[in-house]
Length: 198
Image (cartoon, rainbow, N blue to C red; front, side):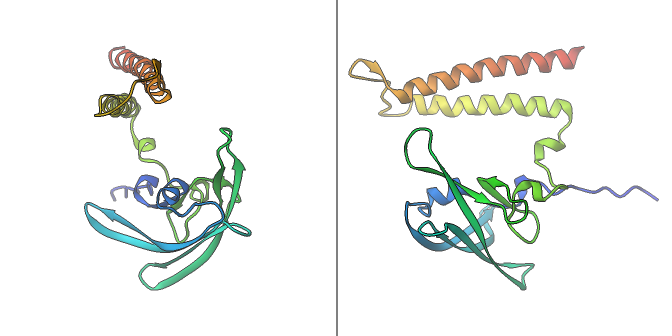
């Protein structure tokens, strides 16, 4: 009898809720209480949604409400905790996973609940399924793609490289990232070639 192939759950493909996105959508304003609805889509088609509330006033939490497997109503709260920013600008917020107790910036819905990635020991990221050579190629491509985005920003209309005769912080930050990417790209490409031809 032929062997049955098992395909792992990929974190890249499951629904996610991140602090970064909640902040982007206006849910993480200091001392606020906000409610709304988030949607997920793939190839332009809606694949899911969730009602959520974020309370940053007393005993901060976020509350999730959604339907699981089309007929099970789910509702629960997840504690939020924060640390002061090293830059002295407000707070850095985290979820506290209700299952693992770990602090995290992103929760994954690889089962019934949104949890820290360690709550799903059989799930993995797509890159973890790549072969050795596949991971090398992926690393090179990511560095190239990152540099492309930086160059687009650098040469965008109205971008200021200097102010009052001095390089702007944004300009210096981009140059540092480009230098870092170029170094990493050369190293990754050299390693890939060495492995390929040895």
